[in-house]
Image 1 (tube, rainbow, N blue to C red):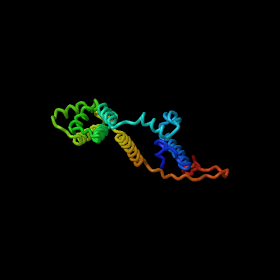
Image 2: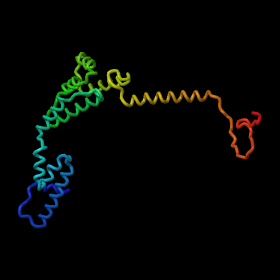
Image 3: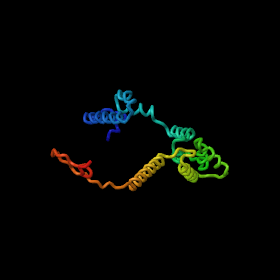
Image 4: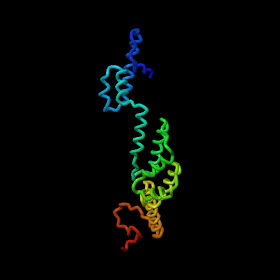
Length: 220
């Protein structure tokens, strides 16, 4: 938007044309920044008189150093807890993503250390499975472990929720199967019923006593 210079100090002794341009850029910069803020912060920062003061205040409050970001990621990794109502594989990928972000600082973690952490963070319903992995005395890398978790999760879902709740897709498939079964059963029952070939004639109001509306007989 060509207004970033408004976040810096205003140069002294500007010509009138440049002074007017700076005021326009300053208003544009402040408006753009305020619009991107969460509404609960807007009232606190909209009162600042210049773009530079606005930007400096935001950096002072929300700006973080690389060291702070690294510590924050490490805290997220340590505090991460898997829950029962979400896919274990999906949550394992989130842990893997945190470790990949730490590598950028750089703060690399051993692959077997990450895999061990994922096993430790498995939810309570996976306790026996986690114990069985530990008893194998085998070192997993993260990719191998996630593949193993995926196989186990699919097996549990196939067993109709033994240890985990079945996914929404499985529940929908079961309901659809029952619906189609009932539908086919009704169709078979209707096929065994005799066909009614009786044709109804349209009656007219001609003030005459007519016959029986099905067979046309006047005797009953």
